[in-house]
Length: 320
Image (cartoon, rainbow, N blue to C red; front, top):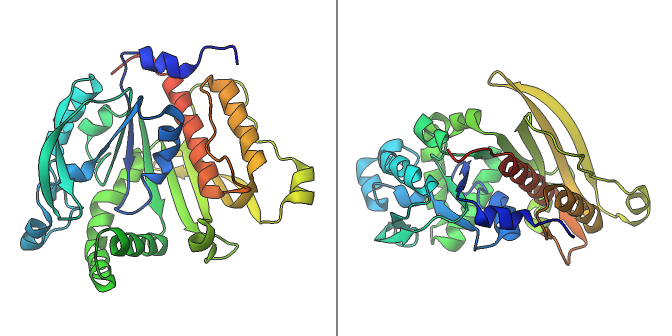
């Protein structure tokens, strides 16, 4: 490809592009930004988990009788101040929360890269935070999917018993509805996740879910992006179910387009989309799904999100 790689433009820019991702604990926030990390690499991308800004450790939250979803259990004001510095490219002393011990480790010096991903419960919680975020995403699995994921994660990675996880889930639900769910209103894109219509077991077996990608209308347009459907491969080669539909909806007084995807597409169909995005954005290589026969809907949504985020960065006129 003879065009200059847009990665080089980002690397040479003084801008820090901030991507804010909100959602409940264990909702898949990290998964849906993995494409950006993969495409741009660790030299250009850094990540902060807002759990580091808890103000109370695990024992302190138990003692106070509040959950991590309660703003009072978090240093949101400190994060607001740190975000202003990070957006200017200034290093901060970042706190560190240790999920294994439920306590705090010593703070570390954190230098933001050109793309800064911020993931957490309260990422879009205040106007001061939203002001310094260039693109915002909310990840919103249905309740039962979220519960299944959280049970698996906390038992496997954080040493909880199933009963302990269930107790925490039910105890935190009112705070989720009160403090976390309303942040959806401020997101440029919302990822909805439900069990596949082709079988609930496909989630655990092959990570297949029904994904609804809701997006605000784009303000700038580029040349067309092709999601070409090769009828020969679909009719002759594909042996798995896939569905794709588009819906429009009104959410919080603005129009959203909803792309609903379910099942699995053959890898070479998605590869064509990757090449189309490369050609349009001049970001290359984009190759997220090598060595696979099929790509589930969630990964296709991740790729479409990458295109939308790159598109947003291309048209970003000034550093805030």
